Image: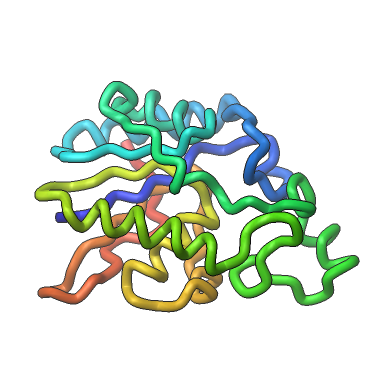
Length: 189
């Protein structure tokens, strides 16, 4: 079993560096092109399960990548709830919270790292029960936590897994040990 973790295509806020959790914004034209390029890779893979964040940027990426008809909306894949930091850039946040790091500090009126870890752990549990490959369409910070938790690291280790928009990650196993096979891989084709 392999877990294909796909970050949605580019949005206006991913370009500007604004934290996009609960704001439901669409893909840019370039984001749609990135998503369409995924089709060549993803439609060749047999997936037992396809899960998708209910946010439109993830749903549209999944649809354009050719797996939309099979996708099941999973609220556990929604991006981190940034609370008071929604729509703000890192520079804006650090004016009032110097040294802030979402993976360690969470967000006022939003989610804590422990709450995000609980959601991610539920997704991992469901994925590991599958008899075949699983595709997940989601968001940057939630997928970075997923990578850390997949290999047994604490939530704050998500800071070490940089992730661009419109990229593919594959999590699997080295023998019986959970492993990262591909991380932040661009789609080519």
